[in-house]
Length: 478
Image 1 (cartoon, rainbow, N blue to C red):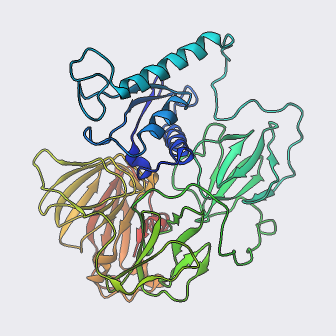
Image 2 (image 1 turned 45 degrees about the vertical axis):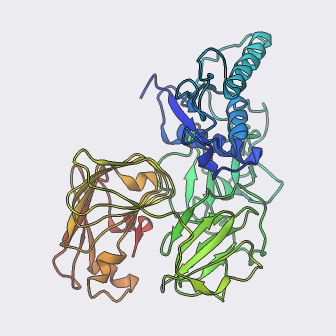
Image 3 (image 1 turned 30 degrees about the vertical axis):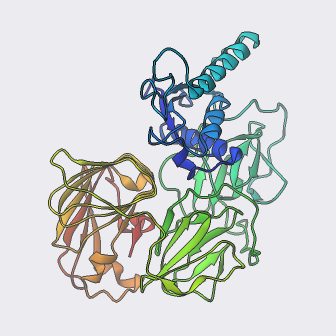
């Protein structure tokens, strides 16, 4: 695409109403960087405007972090437009009730505009380069590149130099080029200079290659770009604490079988092992078992087990509580859709969604959502990122995705569909039950009730024209 602009909207709920200025600013920067990475343009890096922001998510109550949000936007370096509901509104009201003067919120916005205008007036003339701008600042000249297959581990104070003389580092889990964030990255565990290119590996052991503007597209690859002999050896068990990094958003969830993770306020990474235990920084917690879900709620990490009981703790060394567990979920109640004829839209992120029975049109704009699809013929348009869809058993309906959700980090939960078969849970026999058929428009995912039996189509993924079971496995929960 050419001649396009990315429009980011920013309110306090996106950080769980955090009042920490650094957290709010970092979240906005990450949102902008992710937008630039996922929407490539023929003109170079996607230009951004923060086309909507304000001091109230609801338009009624002032967000606890309203001042931090306004400050983050005004200091971001990007153009912006403040939202106004109308005169006298308690939230997002730029003018007083009479409409004749600025509200306190309006005065904050006016002050920011004035400060920006003053800075622009005193700035040196801008020289427009002939080449598109990238995420990096100017590279030092004459710097020798690192040796082929050099690596840099997270936590190291070292750096890598690419063939153009750019200096690469890892800062708080983010890949940086010449001291600035390189596109969007998070939970980076290693950088490598291989084949004349810079690669990043994240905590899920997936790799992406830097293409000069961003980290490419897709869900990454598990194939290391390093020669077998040069690959980083297995690390010693990680300590119980980890370097500080940006915490996960409030109400973030991770399901068993997923490669996702939760990062707590102290930078510790929490995952679910293949054997159903909680792991902190890669070390399994032997006091846990049959874990089905992790959740990050109000700075506490919660685990749910197969008996639908919950426990929480606020640090790796704390004990799980309450002792017998609680049947009350810490997460907000699931959003239940009504199956409106015009379609249902979910714009919230990190929420649970229950679709209505029957044939539905669903528009999922949020990210990190868990959507439980009921029977029927559902058509889902997903413009978010990292959403999980729970599919029903074969014969209970079909779900059609209008785009390749796997390219946007999407996941299909086949737990219910496979539970209706006689599969014994062995990974070696999964291909006898789950098959993928490609077509010119996309891929059809089918599940057979018996080993080698006739598959029943349960999902169609438009755009996934070269999908195979192997390529989809990282996006399946079985």
